[in-house]
Image (cartoon, one colour):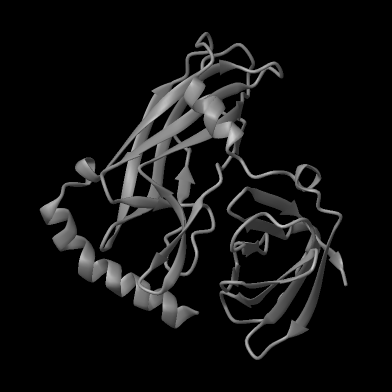
Length: 268
């Protein structure tokens, strides 16, 4: 895994400079904050709106072996206690024979914000580190500094992005999700058996271990009747032993008709 990461970083370093020379970063991706007002729970709704130049894409939270995972830093914000992000269903791309997962054209990323002191002003300030790719991948740091408007009205773009989230297990008809573990030379193999109706077309399963120190390989996916089977290898970044919390595992199934978000799995 470390060799793959070093190879990707070397490619980015070698290719990013000529790409930026030909096309300025601000011409590749632009970001704005959309205000969505206050929710019925008393939290605040907003969204990050990324607009990408023609042919460019950016990545989902689990971008695949060919992608760059996004990172958020909100340390400069004021009156921010917690933030929940709703990721719209991404698309699967083939990138030079490798799979990546993300968004083309634009991304509206809904945020639900809980304040430290209700009734006081909120300011979102920080930076996002993302990858943007066309023929090459360019790491980009986007700065944000935006006072939220609690009196803003409902934003159709935010509502549309919320509606594009993956189905829950209940909505998708998932009746069980079981995971078995087998030790491997470098880590552990996970095999997930998910009882669920077909989500359409070629289904792609993405397994997230729930621990940022554990890397998951691209899963192989197959069907056995009403059961979707996904197999991946899990490796600690230090290549040492680790304990896996099954309740923290997240499996996303991406199909042509819809996507499914599965939280946790039982032994078996």
